[in-house]
Image 1: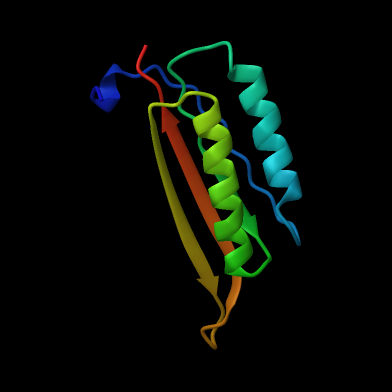
Image 2: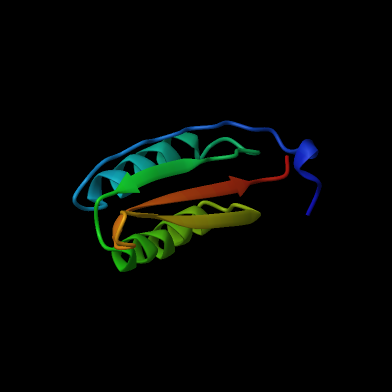
Length: 102
């Protein structure tokens, strides 16, 4: 895999507050369909979801599969839990990055 500096980048950032993840997945799918004819893209999806973390992690898995289906050469995903004063998870944020060599 070539160094990141050899990639061509296109960045899309979504911030979604939702009780679920359908909106996030819908927007991501639409964006991937729009970009699928292009090569060398970096797609960043950031969502803060008022949902349990297991739902977020399941959505990450589904989203990763969508991106792989569109032929990305690499995929990085991170999950950040947002906790309240008691330590209970109130929201989660996930970020996905894909890159394709030209």
